[in-house]
Image (cartoon, rainbow, N blue to C red; front, side):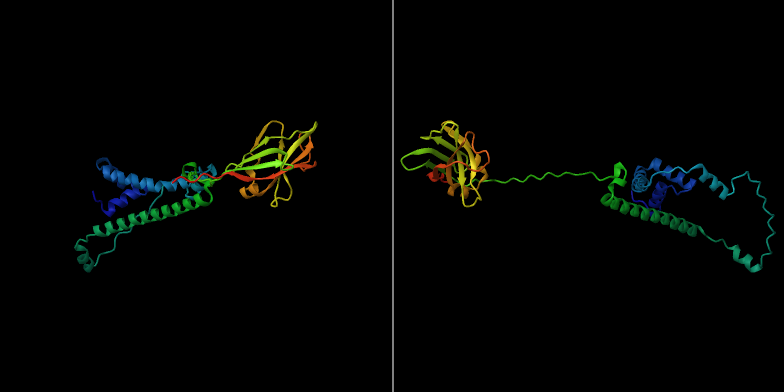
Length: 291
């Protein structure tokens, strides 16, 4: 149903509570028989309800009520108000009698006045609602803790999943023969080109009593040799110690074995003599990519 501006204004004023008793009774009668009008009143109540949420209720103290009663003259029982007798009306000139003889229809003036008052009230409420919404939005952005729990913005967590496909570069197997000379190999060092894990195979090295063999990585890219741990306690020693170095450093480095006190160098720096050395060579080429 299409409602007139007066109906819309009545619904808004009813939600505001600015109607007199007769007008409220009129609105409630319409609501009892018209569901669409009832829905319009409820919509106004929801829109204007934010004004109540933005302002908390405060109960005035007794002294405030006492000051109000004093200001309006209700502090003490009032005596009856006596009005003077009204003076008799002055004689009416003949022209005025003729002028007032014709009835004047003032219903349009009354309706327009009521309509203007009604829309002024609605405009005032709408302006206040807009100001309250602006204040609420600003408070949500800059001071959300000051809002009631129901009006605080909810924290939203958005999980973004980024899928990346990592294709490891093809790499082969590398081997270094650690020896003193070509006639006396001591260890065989094997390095996986992809994971850079290494395995040391003891061949002819025999440690002295109370001593240990320790493997070192020597490269121009490093300030000093780096220990890769003690080797030779068993026939095979496997470690992932090369994973922290880049491929170029691993492939071009010199690998040296020193004779250290049992358990390895106590200082992290080589202390014993270098007994075996070697460099990596590619033993197995990388697998060709599938077509």
